[in-house]
Length: 397
Image (cartoon, rainbow, N blue to C red; front, side, top):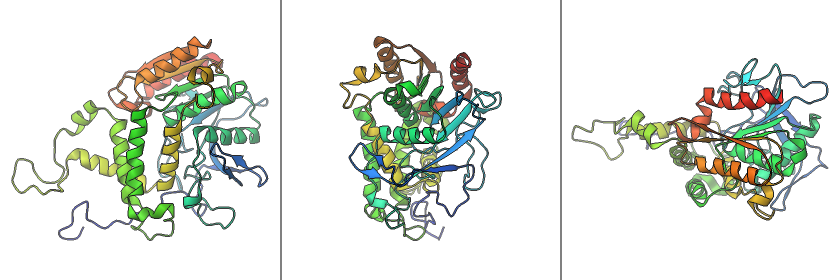
């Protein structure tokens, strides 16, 4: 920093987008691009052509393709559910401790697939991808997508892999939304479902949190209505994206965890002395800044908007006669997993999933994760998540 700078005024070298592109190492990604004549019809009425889905796999598909499991990632996740950090994938897999030989999702038994969702920025077609008409990024031309659109794209990949039936579809948060839609849209292509820390329809408060993040990005002058991909380092919409992530990060953890970890400690300056500057940060501010900084370097602002909007639009009952009518299509075993300290997707929503499934003739177990960590507990409490998954998968095997 220059003399007189603080964290908020120092220059930054953030890229215009943290999206992966084909000039970078693919890491463990594989890619499937639909033929040009097989367009993807979206719920909003638009179509996308030459759609690419990035995905990763673990284990071996057996001769009759009867051992496949699909994992669905959360908002800022991607296809890298397991594996070490490597070129093109600078972080370990988000469920690294759950996927592998002898682990809860045992790759000696199961062939595991995880895709980057449609609209994402880590290899699948999204706003940062080249438009087939001119090879320039879609940017503001990219349409709104829904959770159902994401699932339709995954179904196209399943066809490509010759997987007719998933023995289980598993996912947390936004991933859990995809899980429910798989059970409703393709009931004959799933044998079990595990929605974790999710909901059947977004509530007004959940939409409100998303709206604040969208406003932060829209008001960043460097966002340029979504067409910022030619911006020089430091001149993209990094500030709006960082604020949006900071807002979301507050909802991912509980009050107790914030208080125990950070208290009222200052990261800059000393609260017991005079001369405190307006922009001296508390430790919790530094934590939020850290998470904002991390996301800027690995994610795309437009994808953040697109995926967040899909989550807010999520309602399994839309156009289907209501939630109960939609959920009545689920006739396979369900394990609904909640987290008692989750303030973003409170555990009552996962109990509602159980109650609706059972009331419409299905079977559903409810398991609650005992953790103070809030919504992120499904990415932290591996022992408890492992126990929930092992019970179901062992029965299937």
